[in-house]
Amino acid sequence: MKKVQEIIKPFLAIILGAIILLYYFNWLTLEGAGLAIGIIALILAVYYIATGILSVLLGEKLKGARKVLDAISMALFPIFIFVYFLIVIVNAGSGYGPTGWVIAILTLSASIAASGALIVASFVNVKVIKRIAKLIAMVFILTLLLNILFDIQGNPIVLGNFDVVLFVIYFVYSYMLLSSLSSLESKEGNTVSEE
Image 1 (cartoon, rainbow, N blue to C red):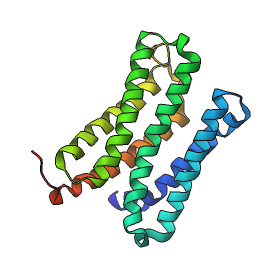
Image 2: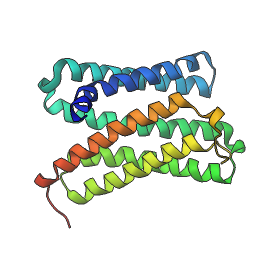
Image 3: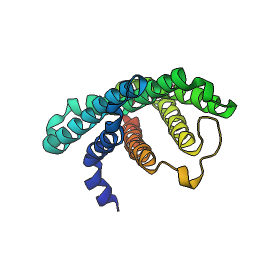
């Protein structure tokens, strides 16, 4: 099973980028906020596909650039989620119920915190910062799950309205994020302890 994970891992960015591209491509036909989200998603998808192809083709030759690309890859998706929810709230804020507002505010906070914490933890060798980044990343994954399970009014999503493709996007990114966090953890032996 571990060998299968090692084979799939380099292709995850390509898979994520391709699914995001297909999911949001039709948004380019919309106007206003929908078009803005479509353009941002297209840029995000192209980035993931390009970095995935580079990782597969160059592999170990990337060396120091891999660390930078991994950090950017982990931080970009939370930034996209932040921008997405900000645009949705501005345009459809009146449709939010109390639970929807709690989830939206938690998502905005966790996404912006996760993007910053993941970048800092990638380049700063301090145990406490890495652990804080892991905690924030797990809260961000929780918010992704909450957004799948509840609509903007805060009502639970029934099985017939479950967005399978969005779930796959969130799952693939979460898997990439958890893999990145485990690689940070493996480097903790060489970090400077601030405890």
